[in-house]
Amino acid sequence: MAFEADRIDDAMKQGWSVMAVGEAEGVVDAAGKQRLDAVARSMPWAGGDRTHWMKITPIRITGRRVVQP
Image 1 (tube, rainbow, N blue to C red):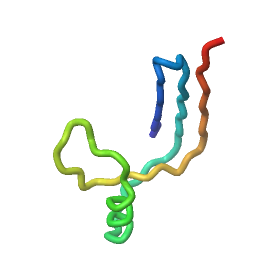
Image 2: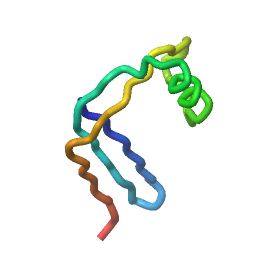
Image 3: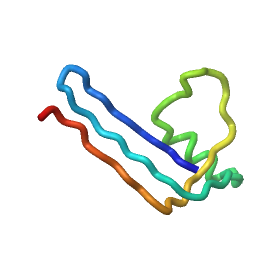
Image 4: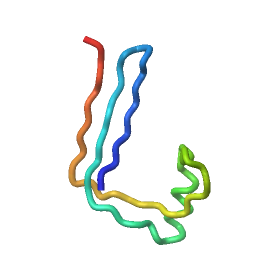
């Protein structure tokens, strides 16, 4: 599985991008799901309830910073 997170600041003409690639598995234990629900910092853009959590064991992590020369 691949997971990518990006941040772009148009006003400052800078940003970053990070990608983690690895094996994914579902979080099935109740305590793990509760912990993730408590620390989640964002809500799905599409709305609605989300009850399934996945975790990635990364094999490779890459990233880059984007800045105006």
